[in-house]
Amino acid sequence: MQTERARVSQKMEPRCVECGFPIKTLFVQYSPGNIRLMRCENCKAVADEYIECEFMIILIDLILHKTKAYRHLLFNVINQHTVNFEGSLWKTIFAFLLLDAYRSLLLKRNEGEWGSSMNFSSIVWTFQEIIVDVFVGNFVFFCIFLLSMRLMLNTSIEISRCKDILLAVLVSSYFKIFLIATMVWEFPSSVIFIIDLFVLSSNAVALKVITDSAMNRCIAACFCAQALKLLVTQGPARRSLRF
Image (cartoon, rainbow, N blue to C red; front, side, top):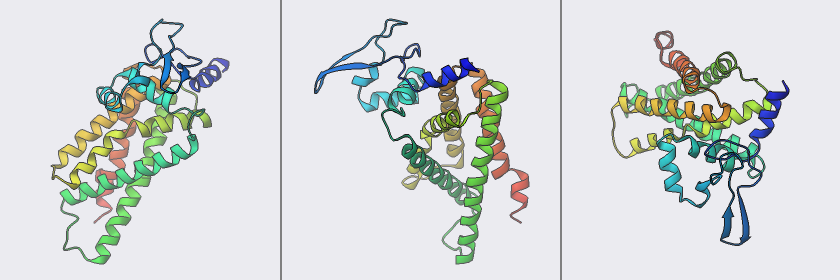
């Protein structure tokens, strides 16, 4: 129990992006624009080289699923000591649910359930279905996700720990932003599921970084949660309720 508490407390500290070792400070600022990056006491490498990198370089490394980019984002950027954690959490939840609702709307449009010929009552009924799918589906997703973490990763489920993991999963779902491209260009529904696969793999990398667990177990935990979410929102049982 003490080991797990120590691990959670270390989670609040900045980390070396190379080895994940806790670092007291990432850089020393002598004057505005004049800083010296600190080295890790464990691996002797520069603790966080991304501090001096452009945003596009960080984004490319996140897309390439580099663990050091995820360590930079989850430990050294999104830190309860440097940002309004609660405010960031609620804003991220809102953006995540909004993008998930837009994903459901795209699927209905591709299935022919949404069009310009719909009357007002059909539009209201469709939006009700989308809201139910989004909230119920994500509730199932996070419940199964936390349960899988408990069973597969042997991770304790505490309130502070849940908040950290929840924010990590939400932030690592940034691939959902690419759904906005469908406002400009038309894509087949298969593109939506390709984005889902990228989101799943990104969640697995973020979970590995947060929990220091084996990648195969992280993939299994994310896959179980995502599969049950799809089963609840798009499975045969859910489809039968619409008729």
